[in-house]
Structure formats: C-alpha cells, structure tokens
Length: 187
Length: 197
Image 1 (tube, chains in turn cyan, green):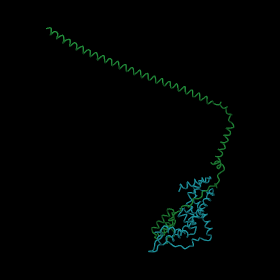
Image 2: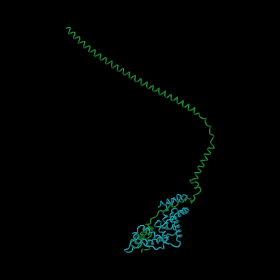
Image 3: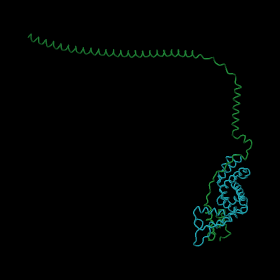
Image 4: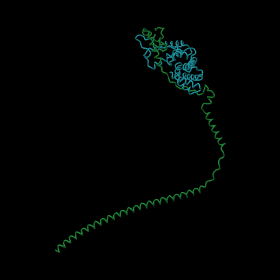
C-alpha cells in the first residue's frame, strides 16, 4: 500500500506537470475500483461507466487543487460520491425506491448465483448513503477517517450509517436461527 | 440481544485499538448473546464478500488534451514537431549559405583523348606480354639445359663405372687363365720328364 501511494504520488506529480500519459497510468490503477464503487451504488453498468469517465475527467481538471497527494484515494472517491449522488438525485428525487421494497430474509441454503442475487437485493434495499458506507468499508477497505474524508462528513456519521446498514443486512442475510429450522446465508 | 456498550461491529471491521479489542474478547468469552451477534455479523460480512468485483467493460477514455497547461517555457522546450521543423530550417539555411559563400570552382580539365589512351595501353600491354613470354621461355630453356646436363653427367658416371667393372672382370678372367696355363705347363713338363726317362 505504501509502494502504491509512492507511485501514485509520482504519477500525480507527472500529471500536474502536464504529462497526460502519467495521468493515464494513474487512471488505469484506479478505474476498476471506482467503477465497482459506482456500479454497486447506482446499480447500472452503463451509468457506472459514464460516471467513472466523468469522475476521472473532473479529477484531472482539479488535480491542481489536491493539496496532499497521499490523500488521493479519499479525494478521488469524494468526486465519485458527488457524481453518483447527483445521478441518484436526478433519477429518484423523492425517495429511495429500493428501500421501500419488502425484502425476504434468507432462510434456505443458497447456490453462489442465488447468493449473489440475494446480496445484491439486500444492498439495493438500503438507502443510498448506507449502501455507500457498506461499499466503501466492506468492498473498498477504507478506514473510517478516509470514509469521512471522501463523504465530507464526521466519522460519527459514517459509523452511524454503516452500523445501521449492517444491522439491516444482518436481518436479511443472517437471520436468527429458529430452533430446528433452516440455516442462514449459505451455510 | 447483545450488550450495547461493546462495539462488536467496530471489532469485526478492525477499527478498534488494542485495549478495546482485549476488553471485547474478554467479554465474548463470558457472553453467549454477544458471541451469537458477532457470528451473525461475520456471516453477513461473508455473504457480502461473495459479490466479486467486475472488470470494467471499457477502459476509461484517456485524456488527450492538456487540461492542465504546462508553463510556456516547458511547452516550448518539449520535444515535438516544432523542434523537427526548426532543425530542418537550420539545415536548409546552412546548405544555402554554404552554396552561396563557396569560391568559384577551378576550370575543368581538358577533354580526354580516349582513343590515344587506349592505343597506349594496348601497346604497353603488348610489350609487357612479350617480355613475360620471353622470360618464361628463357627460364624454361635454362631449366631444360640444366636437366640435360645432369642426365649426361649421370650417364657418363654410370658408363665409367661399368667400364671399370668390365676391366676388373677381364683382369680376373686373365689371371684365372694364366693360372691354368701355368698348371698345364707344369703337367706338360712333368709328362715330358717321364717320357725322357
């Protein structure tokens, strides 16, 4: 991770001097992570790809404003967060449609494909902010402080969103075992 | 229902410092409800992690326009067509200046009489060829004479040797004959004495 930061720092420095190829290398290192973050947040591949392109273009245009090159990842995901929520607001201005859908808990042994569908459904049942917290923590491996930086909010807010999301997901994906009943979540 | 004062989620996610972790671990050893809660959280995390990252369907379009403009002096010094054109221009000017400043060339040499030159070359070749032939013939003749002299000398030596051998043979035969004549004379003399007596 340290080596990655060092190399990112070098690529950012090159890009700031106008070296487009240096920035292209930086994009190639981060595009998959950003794309998957956006995909899980907005739930559509085409939208996620469009947003990812927009994110990297804005990052390039604003690279001069990045004060600490060592904080590139939270800074980049903050741009991605802003882009994604702009789209979500345009798409669902009133409320989170997914959150209103009733969800079934997992009460039977699942095959991998079914498990993926169940997890996907469970994630999409969360409000976007909670879903985003899960994505950044579970899938992207951010620390609470980095999440707070990316989301531009206090750590306490990050924890609150994440813990609420985990409680909800726990009910859906790992329900309490009933005596003599079926097992949970792919066991 | 777990004990609310213990941050099991922070514990699971690796966000707690060591003292807090140790406190939770001690509590878990004694609290079945918190152990079950932690187990459910682990199952939830494991279920979430079954979703794999997807490959990006298309690489992000790389930026080709320099949005962040480099300083003018860096752009001016950057390698590119500008320096290529400048180099070509300098080279062209150098060629023109060289042609302009060069002194007039010397008068061309008189036209060459190729027929006369060819005749001279033929005569010279002929002369050299004849000399070479003469030399070769003389050397061959000399070698032939030398070999002939050697052969004559060898033959003469052989004849002389043969003549000496023949003389020795004749001399030996004469001696043998002479001895036989002596023996005959002795026998004859003896016979004559016997007759006389």
